[in-house]
Picture 1 (tube, chains in turn yellow, blue):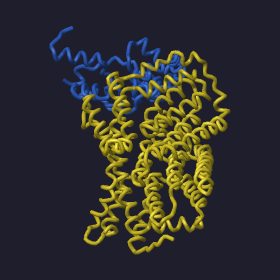
Picture 2 (cartoon, one colour):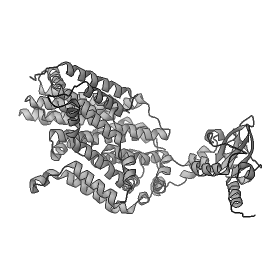
Picture 3 (cartoon, chains in turn blue, red):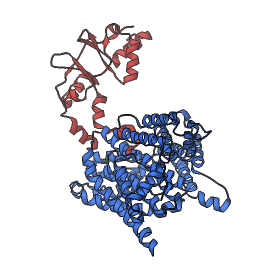
Picture 4 (cartoon, helix red, strand yellow):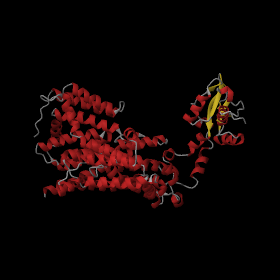
Amino acid sequence: MIESHLTTVSYIAIVAVLAMYGLLMAEKINKVLVVGITGFLLIFLQVYKMGATGSQDQAFSFISRNLDVLGFIVGMMVLVGVVRESGFFEAIAIGLVKKVKGKPQLLLIAIGYLTLVMTMFLSNIPTVLILTPVLLVLIKELKLPYLPFFITMITMANIGGATTPISDPTTYYQAKTVGLSFVEVVTNSGLIVLILSVVTTIYMQIVFRKQLSSVIVKEKEVAAYKPSSAIKDKKILKIGVPLLVITIVIMLSKDFIVHATGITLDNASIALFAASLAVLIFKKDVKEILQHIVDWEVIFFFMGLFIVIGSLEQTGVVQALAALLLKWSNGNANALQFLVTMGSSVLSVFIDNVPYNITMVSAIQAMAKAGIYVYPLWWALNLGTSLGGAGSPIGASCNVVALGQAEKEKIHIKFLKYLAYGFPLVIINGLVTFGVLYIRYGILAHH
Amino acid sequence: MLVKDIYNKHLVPISEEITIHEALSMMIKSHFNGVVVLNKNKKLAGVLLIQDIVSQIVPLEMTENVNLADAMYKQNFFQDNCEAIKDKKVKEIMRKDFFKLTLETSVMAVAAEFLHADLYVFPVMEGDEVVGIVTRSELKKALALGMNITP
């Protein structure tokens, strides 16, 4: 049993976090202001004060313990932002379109898997920023139905985030905080992502069979496509793309490097160094990069969240949350597993999965400290938050980015229409995830 | 130098109710690349430039990434898009928000707006009446005056 003692400051933290979730869902006030103001109020209310350590110092320690996560995000934003200018990824996408001869059913599979693979290495926001323009041109030129293509791209971009620690900031946060290695993430979450991608592909082909078969694309319509013309900058292609690949390889093999050589490396310094090199080699304007390539909204949102969610940890609320989850599941490991998988999936459809993930990481850590076997829960949480993000137009930032670009071209996907296709798939993917984890850790663990 | 020193009183306005197809035909006949658009009451409604028509043809993604336009060349895409918009009304695509001149406006202000807004047809107003236009030809005339070039 987890011991939890809630005090007055615990209740202040609970009210503040609930208010924050409410304001984030209402989407009336910018999310950075929501978390920032909530964080400062908690600091002023002395929620973090600990003996001689002042409230602000303790609150800021929740940011400083996550500097690696923040540095990694900034570094990758710059590196990918610069390498993107090569036009390399657009060229691959256009090459694939030619390869499948523009046939809608095959094109849907090709776009889906390209999104998945790109997300694994670039994370999902850069991926949709690169692919959405190509998709919009395809939709116009080949008169393709937009709904299947947008929902497929968004779903794959979301589930792809769970594949490796570098696929998504929340996956990285979780792996880093818990101490999950690259190999562990890939062989658990990554493997299930592959299964989910197959499920997703079959689902899309079934639910959109009419829309897809109603369009006929002749081979000659895409015959004149020239993938090589999409290359904008040959220098970035020749040096930048290999630099990105090397950076990713070093990040992926850092555990191996420590074992073999004793040299400790971490993602923030690797990513920021590679980003600095890219800026230097391609003579980019640092001011321009800092103003336009780095998405400070994401960074400040994370920093604010670390403080606000930190209040739950500070005041013993996460222990209470962990105890509640255990009570709901009656101490049954499979029930707990089901609760975390399906709860994370469904909640992530409607609420921002970043604060949710950070809250739950703390809660599951509290369970682990109480001696409960939580290992499969990490994958349930990671996969649940990732796949759930695909369920609605506002489920994740990348959905908002992709659909925002579509809006500019007067393609509007209604919330409920999206939900009608997206939500059932979340349930299916959630159940598949639970099933695989159950077979692997539930049944097999007993034998 | 003021607008009244250079403006052109010869005006070939079009109605906002005609189609893009008709407007383009008139622009070709009159040798103007941009025209003043009037409403039913013969009052100023907007201006229509070649760019405004072109912007209806080219997908936004292609203007943001020209390489994409070349890499994703589909035969007849340009022609098909022309066909698709030719029956739209001028009032649907004309510019309604732009810099209006009076006879007393300085030529420097016109030149600045010419660079700033990618606009090259400026209606010259007296009250709410359009009395003339300033186009690139008039700006050329202003430059010639400035450099003492006599035609």
